[in-house]
Length: 271
Image (tube, rainbow, N blue to C red; front, side, top):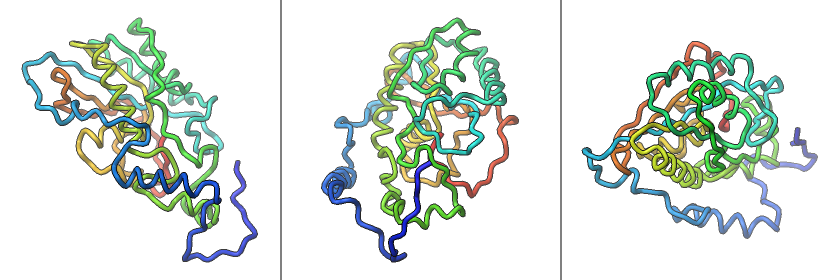
């Protein structure tokens, strides 16, 4: 776990400056964000949300599934770290998804590169005899606190080394820009739609990418309180397409009774 301690005197009313070699890069990145431009160099696929839908067009459904509970006894923000698998309860959540999708006309199954999505997809893959494919675009959001314990009340916010990372919650400054997440998720969803034309696709991803994709479709601001995301463990956020346009968003929690009670004051950075 990273050392957040410092012996330097601090002024609680002033954020510390970033290292000199990072200042120019951060300034350019912030200007791009202020202009509403994606840092990944491509626009969000607005055709999925802004195009006038042809309601007579062929229907396709893309389901974004958040993985099940992860075995994480140390309580770290695991982010994109490898080696994190589902807990026993998470495995039961994955089995619930098989029941949930029993009536669905599934033809496509996609996972992120991280093991917890593979574990979540395995029962569904076996039950429906579908081979999943990995799509790097649906991976967890990048986060600079990855590998650390970081909670409200534990004193971490008082350390000057983290203040600069917390300077801009709208971007956010501590991780992958929300707009970049939307770009990659909408592109992955469009490809899944094309692969499953007239049928249904499942993409097993992570909480923050799923929520940002939904927020874009429903025209919500990307900046938000993480505690208020409607994207529980093993939840299913479904996007119905008429042709290429999304016409409906649905949400279900097949494993709601298995989700453990959580402290709503705990800092969350996506999972």
